Length: 369
Length: 188
Ligand code: SF4
Ligand code: SF4
Ligand code: SF4
Ligand code: SF4
Image (cartoon, each protein chain N blue to C red):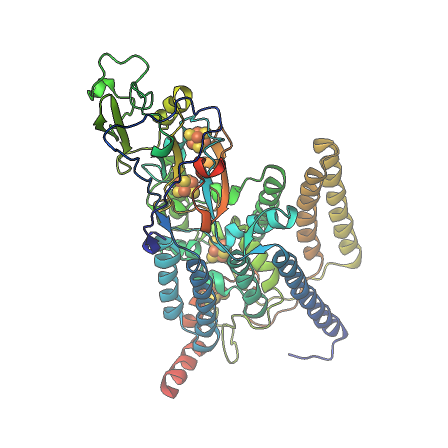
C-alpha cells in the first residue's frame, strides 16, 4: 500500500476559532512571518483495492486450472508461494476473505456500516469458486494456508473421529466471531489472526508466539489452523460439499493401491468401506440424541443469556453444529474406491503425484503439450 | 456412477437442491450487501476532537513505532511563550535541553520566529505517537498539536489494534478520499 503513496499538500485555511481549546489568538507577527501549511501525506488507494480483487479472482482461476486441468502439484505450490509473497508479505495480510466475514456480518446487521465493493468481492469470490470447483482458495491462494503448507515436515495421522470432532471448532469459532461482531463490533478473527504478524514482521510477542506455536504444530499435524480453526474454511467446506468439480485423485480407475491415502497430509481421503448402516432402531436413537443435544444447547442459551437474542442464537448454533455432526453418523455411504472428502480436501494436489494413474495422466498431458 | 438405486436418485436430487439453495443464498447475501456498498475504500483515522491523548496509540499499533503521529496545525497555534506541548509543566529552564522537553524522543523542533515566538514542528520520523505533546497542548494551549494516523505508514488492518483500546473511542473508518480528519475543517 505504501507503494501507492503520492505526497500531496493540504493547505489549511485559517478558520475562525470556535471551541474550547482555542485559548490564545495567534499573535501579530512583526517580521511578516506566515504560518506554514501542515503537510498530510495522502495514500491514493482507490484503485489498489480493485487490483487486489482482480488478482484474487485471477489466482482462483489459475488455481482451478492447475488443479483440475493441469493436475499439477508444482503449479499449486508456486501459486501458494506467490500468495504468501503478495497477499501476505506485500499487502501485509489485510484484508483477506477470512477477515471479511466480519465486515460482511457487520454490513448485514448495521445498514450504516460502510462496506466497499471490493470487500464484498473478496468475500464472495472464493465461496463461489468453492461451490463450483471445491476449495481452490485453500489450495494455493490463501496466504495463511500457504504459509502453513511451507512448514509441512512429517505427517502424524489423526484418527477420523478426532479429525471430524476438532473440525467442528471452525464452526464454533465462526459463531463466536459473528456473535462478537453483532454484540461488540469487534473483529476477533483479525485480533487473533496467528500469522498476520509474520507478514508485517512486527506484532505483540504473544501473538507472534501463537503463530510460531501453530507453525510448530504444523510440522507434524499439517495446517492446524485450516483444519481446526479457520471459520472461512468452515464456510468453504459447506459449499465444497456440493461442488460440481472436485479433486479426483485418479483420472481413470482407482485400483485401491492406497498410495494416495498415505500422501494426503490432511486426512482428506476417504477409504473404501462397506456401509455400516446403523440399524433402524439405532438410527432412530442417534437422531433422538442429537435432537436432545440441540434442545440442551437452546435451553442453556436461555439460561446463560436470558433474553439476549444474539446469545441464544449463538448457543443454538453450537447445538446445530454438534447435532448435525451426530446425525451424519446415522447415515453412511458405500464407497468402493479411495475418494476425496470434498469438505476436508484443501486442494493441494499432493495425491495426484502419488496415484500411479495420475502420473501416467500427467505424462500424457505433458506429451500432448 | 449412475445406478438405478432409488436411494441414489433421492440423494442426487437432494444434492442438487442444496446446491441451488447455496447458490441463491450467496446471491441473496451479495444483493443485500450491494444495496449499501461504497465504491471507495475505507481507512482508519482518528477523530481529533474525540481523542483524549490517553497514550495507547504508542503501544497498541501493530507497527513499531506506531502509525499514529502527532501533527501540528500551525494555523491554530497560539505561539504561546511557554508551549505546553514542548515543555513539561515544570521546566527548569526554557531551552531545548532534553530534560526540558516533554517529548520523550525529542521529535519536536523549535525554530525561532521573532521575540518571543517560536514555531514548533514535529519530525514524524522520530515521533512514536505517545500523544504527550498533544495532551499538553490540548490541556493548556490551543490544541493545535493533535494525533492522526499517518496514512503512508498505516497498513490498514481490518481491525485496527489501537481502535480496540482507544480510550476516547476516537477511531473510525473514513473514505480514502478524506483520509485525514482535521480539527480545522470541522469548525466552519
Ligand atoms: S482453511 Fe482458511 S486459512 Fe486455511 S487455506 Fe482455507 S481459507 Fe485459508
Ligand atoms: S488434494 Fe489430495 S492430497 Fe491435497 S488435500 Fe485434497 S485429497 Fe488431500
Ligand atoms: S488511543 Fe485514542 S484517545 Fe488515546 S491517544 Fe490515541 S487516538 Fe487519542
Ligand atoms: S490500522 Fe493497524 S497499522 Fe494502522 S494505526 Fe491501526 S493498528 Fe496501526
